[in-house]
Length: 136
Image: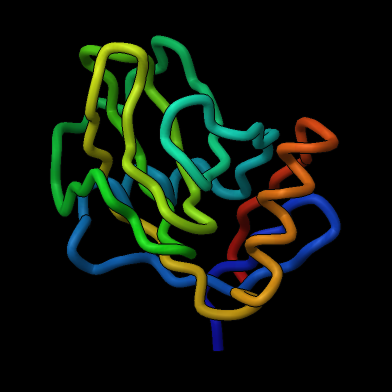
């Protein structure tokens, strides 16, 4: 059974926290339930993101990647670009207008993966979609 329930647009996904990012997971747990909106990425490829501006999670890098697989959620803690959370639904090379970035892989979607590409394409064509992350 999934640890997390992610509702994005009209879709519901089951997900798990990633053990290899304990500090990121611990911090994000304190924010649940988490409500926001996702928009389509600008530079990174097939992904949706939550721009967070100068929000400081007080985190550094752990379990970081520039190439999240579909269903992986990463948190970029800020630095050379704004803080953000990205969810990959296809091929992603995580970047900003300043170049390649790396984010902490802290959540993996485990249920509903068949709807990720539809969510991503819908976000690209129709705009921002509501997002809620909560304990299942």
